[in-house]
Amino acid sequence: MPSSPKISIIVPVYGVEEYIAKCLKSIQMQTFTDFECIVVDDGSPDNSIKIGKSTVEGDERFIFVSKPNG
Image (cartoon, rainbow, N blue to C red):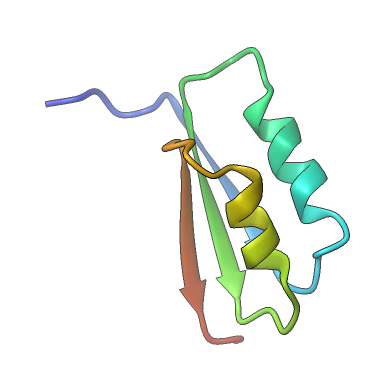
C-alpha cells in the first residue's frame, strides 16, 4: 500500500482564470514534494478548471473535484 502524502493543499476555484495557472505552478514547483493538491471547482463560470488541468497535466499530485456552486 503506498504511503499517504504528508500534507494536503486545498485550492478553492471560482472565477480565477487569470490567476489559477500561476497559483498551481507555484505549488507544483515547491521544493517539498510529498503533498497532494485538491483543486475544488465550485461551479466556476469561466475557464479556470480547464486552465488549471492543462497547467498541471500529468502531475498525479493534483486532484480535481467539481461541484455545483453553493
